[in-house]
Image (cartoon, rainbow, N blue to C red; front, side, top):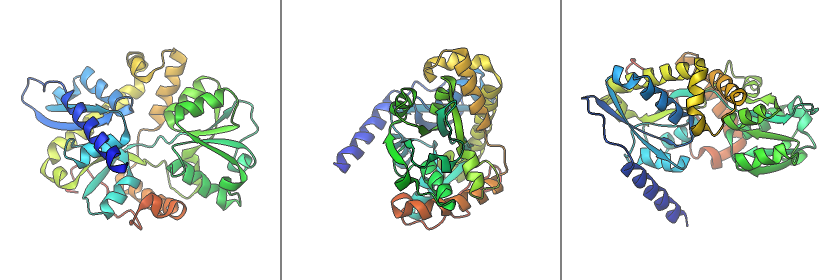
Length: 329
């Protein structure tokens, strides 16, 4: 069954590659990016093209949009993509298995525990005895971090709350119907619930700071092979620069959210404004050294809760895992 799933993902990747449009007519350096069709990277790539940032940087971005995070990872591992977006948990596991992958921060948006506006839930301890929806499953990093913080105050959420795992859209529906007391979900689904009147009772960035992080941590980032990066440093650095420009254009230009509404699946101006505000909050603003220090600390916290099922043979996040543009790393 596992082999069937893997080959199914490979087949999906190849179909996606066939769907890549013709390369631009101008002579440019090429970079291949695999992303989720509904992901924020796809939003930013649309901004890159709309504003001509790729032309200005002399980069031709070949994009393949795939249906699952596993297919995206297979595209990178199989050599069908140069760059993807994933988290440093997966990267550390792959590095421990021998792959020379590197990470560059992309987003610190982690989501929140969402509750009805007047619910008496304000802290982790208030979740005791409540029905809590959790997006992403038992090994979701936000869920593990929330458990770690609760344990420090003497609360074991796995045994002292009623946990309901599920896909984010299903959990959002249950939350709006009042079937759960609180819902831990990803930032974009949290934004959608906020736009419909729910309240972020516990922001996950507050959780990581309470656990000991010095600032907002980008757990999601661009991931690429270290050997490829060494051979293609100029184009990679220009790519990272224009993607960062696209982030700030999108963060500061409400009109662009209207154009992206069909991709996001939201059309109401007030709802799009919530998305824009939360997206803006997630743009990394700290030096690489600070991001790495906090990532290494939180990796230890996650490993202690999730064990080898989460991190595999990797006991820590090594100091060479993060890429610094223009530095030779």
